Image (cartoon, rainbow, N blue to C red; front, side):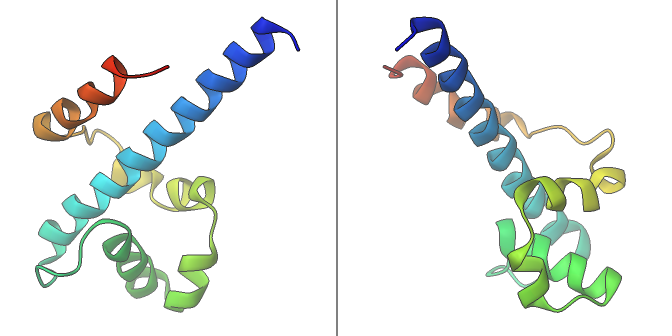
Length: 98
């Protein structure tokens, strides 16, 4: 195979993982903002928020792709940034990449 193709694939998968990590961290933010119980955070908070906001079932929310979840939350995510601790937690991964 072509080395350039592998590099493009590698970057695509890392970018996708970064976007998903960011979305899960946004769920933590939603949990705090909405006053959810401490055991509801991350993706569970995302699903609960969308269910309550739009009247979708939790099952419908869980079946959504990550891209669709990001789109559904695009207004809420405007201006939001990853917390410093979330950024620092991701740095060790980069040092150990193949």
